[in-house]
Image (cartoon, rainbow over all chains, first blue to last red; front, side, top):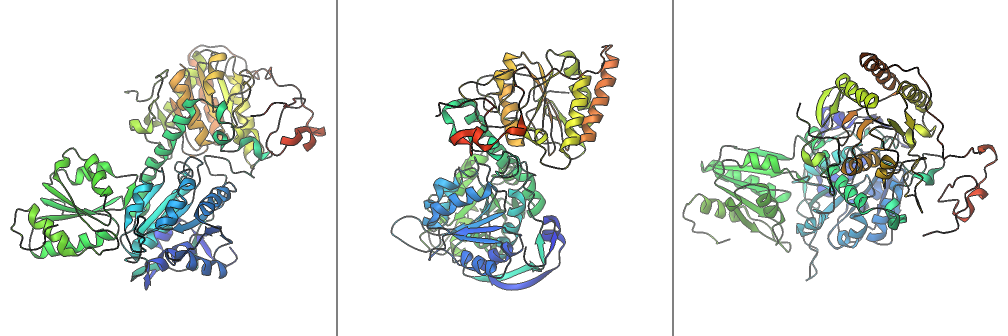
Length: 389
Length: 237
């Protein structure tokens, strides 16, 4: 670091370091986390529109908080450059959204297999035609089977904390796969909220490239003998079995990330009113609306609980199964048309018939609390006089 | 103790140990057959396997073969001390991770892309992995469990390995020597007589004169491959 910062552990940074309240956008919150993460290199194709994140990270680079910033020519180039830079054992950050994410997806899905530790910001946008720049998190569905660890931030505070934690999780020797932090474009990235932030004089300890499950390119003589991407280079001299156990290893690594999600973020889910009959379960900024619906329900003295899902991969099957053990209905509001979160929950619990598919909004539409309450009243068997979902 | 992870062969398509519910041991503990136990218990079981099973072998990896960190030489010396105390022990290195073509010399080395070939060729029934990067150690250990009846021991500098029958974590030179001492103790308890003796030289590796080596020795692939001295690579993929 060119700036004289005090380097500290992630535990200290997230749990003990003094914080000050700021009123900033989600994009600023992500960039402020990057500022405190001792990032070696940021790489991006900062197309407009996506979000301000990589523009702000560019400012941070200019201020000396990041050693290197490389502007790639498009997203596939960006994500490929991340894979290349990881070979040198450096700490990396990039962010993208919507169509940009999908353009880079071929490289992104190769990151876990190549054991690339990096943090990817996903500021969600519509990806399907008709063209739109509005928020819609359908793009997260494309990451579910990529092998990356996937966190979903509810608000600006989550965006700050999860992005910081992601830098620690991705470099754990027993994880060492990318961690993506997703949040909704506009609703979070462009809106301001209160964020308790640590001092920018404090930064996360610098990475130790030797503490890795794979060798970096340049820390051995001769380096080329132990390149990590053997399957790419000599695939026809390899057995099918190593391909299969290699894939297993990626998902095992993904699973091992769960203990660090507990360590740094307090766990993969948050549960309010655990004894309720009906639950509203959501992730990302849908969780903010679900939280508000829960508050409405509390005021009306309804038996309604709230579950926020922080980790989408690894998916907290056991935790959700336990939380919904006695639930009669679970309502899952989402910001996408396909309902990927509802599908995940149905697959995780033994009684998937209790899942209410929706309400869902997409194409940039907002998610009124009343839409969720409509489902709450229906789930409780109360007569509804408002909109049908 | 119920054994979650057992000596193989477990079959054509192995289930990974983590997917079977095995979790890495916390600091100060070890894994034995997938269960969290005291380090000494795991070390004693591993020692017994090395002392009683056929063709015990140590597989050192790049992290203890190349002198790239301050503590490597001390740890490597400790590994030799350990090997000397295991009757009829061999040392077969895993010097790198690239697939071997056209065919691996199974007496000279082991490779993560097909580790079973070295195990089966040498009829190895107990083996120690040490200094192999965790990703490749996990792949190798799982493939060995899938296709061989070898008891595997992981001595890991980091968090250990779910796939091994015995997994010791945070291993440094002093831990290798502690394992050596436990092994000698178990050996005496079993009444096995043995005078410490270094393993035989690797029979397949020619003497190399590293002092005269130049990049030209590697030909047009010098940036990618480091061939054996005198080896000429004429055919490439």
